[in-house]
Amino acid sequence: MARLHLSAALFVVCIGAPMAPAIPPHRALFDATKAEMAGNADWVIDADTHNVGTGSGGAMTVGAGSDSNPQRFPTPAQSGITSSTPETYWQGSLSAWGVALVQRGVSVETLPIGGRITYGDSTNAQDLSNYSLYIVDEPNIAFTSAEKTAIINWVRDGGGLFMISDHNASDRNNNGIDSVGVWNGLLNSNSTGSNPFGITFNVDNISPTSTYVDTAASDPVIHGPAGTVAQMIYHNGASITINTAQNATAKIAIWTTSSHASANGMVAYAMYGLGRVVALGDSSPFDDGTGDPGDTLYNGWSAEAGGDHARAAINASIWLDNPPAACAPPSVGTLATTGAVDGSPFALAVLSSGSGALSYQWRRNGSPLVDGVRVSGAITRTLLIDPVLLADAGTYDVVVTNTCSGSNASAGSNPVVVSVLCRPDFNGVGGLTTQDVFDFLNAWFAADPRADFDGSGTLTVQDIFAFLNAWFAGCP
Image (tube, rainbow, N blue to C red; front, side, top):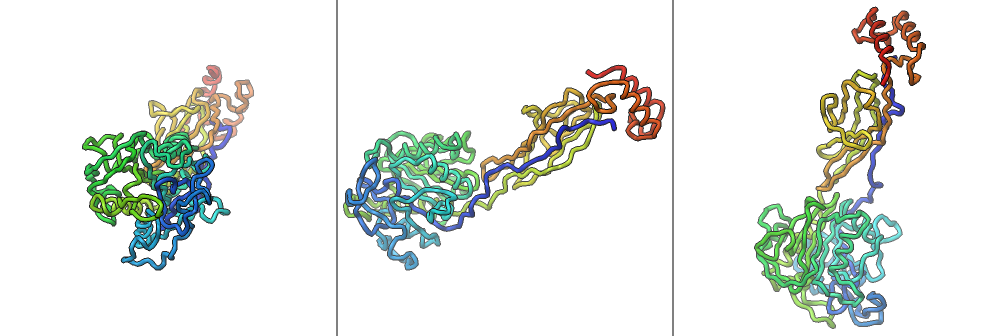
């Protein structure tokens, strides 16, 4: 049979992360493992004891002071909260936030001192896979590499992360890093090798009163179930920069000035994979003024900005807690290829599936193919080369891409080596010999359809002439 041979069939695999744990909805986790209680701060929803202080390496240590030592479950039990329950039901400067979430159907917990930040670890009862919302207010201890990977992968798989910073040089536990450094360490130095959220906290100290909010009706922080936000007040915070080249979905909800630039945000948000993130550069807006009796606290939650700080927190929290429906990344399946010969049409096709529109890119020897005189379908599911030439031999693969919640996902086939045989090499041994002539003539006399060398559909003496002309012309 005159043919173009593939040295291997086109086997295609679905490439992606292992199956992610199912993330349950409406469960919030407030972090307390990163010295959020150090100094004059009390970023917890509830603490029954106050017996910790700053110890070695800035870690909160029992017996070293009288700061809050929050337990996992706030008390009294959240089952007792009604629509009229005051924030003083719990003791913590974020108790108003915690109570408000419970009133909206979100259960709350604290990741206490000694808790582990993991994702997919079944030995950890407070693994991130058990929560839909993770709130970290002014962390003062850097995330480890493993913790960064856990957080980013959890967001990718549908988690909602609320990142709250404070101003530059706000190192409350005196360990050499402040919340700006902690967050930027997560955002810019992680296992992805990039800034996956497209958000950075600026190294500055600002105190604007801003009414420069996003007017888009789709903005989830400005417009949400808690109402419309019209302003925000910083008391020494860090501004925010977004980079849409790093994450095309990154947006600013509130700016520091009338200049709606990418580098002067107060609140920003983005989507990543199936999840979402919100960033705010000051912890003051969410302080409810109550909590650790040894700290000087201020009511930024409801006593400032006409209550807009509380509205912004709840709007953002509900948006983070309700990610869009799961988006299926591309899956590429196996499809048999058809044979061809030098000078004949040759096609490679692939079956694929996934959410939304799929895009394709066929490649040869790692370089993208483009449509031209002989090539068509380079960015479709079927690649056609007509006619195929000896020079088209090489390694082929295809990359299939879609967009899941603003983050591109792709799957690639395994490479396949395509070997193009010279057309008059009738027996396919890889060179021209008189045996090719004998084999062709035997096929022609036997009325073998393979001997239809001129492609006319019938066997005639013209096939013999066409074969001999090609045989004498030789192969390049």
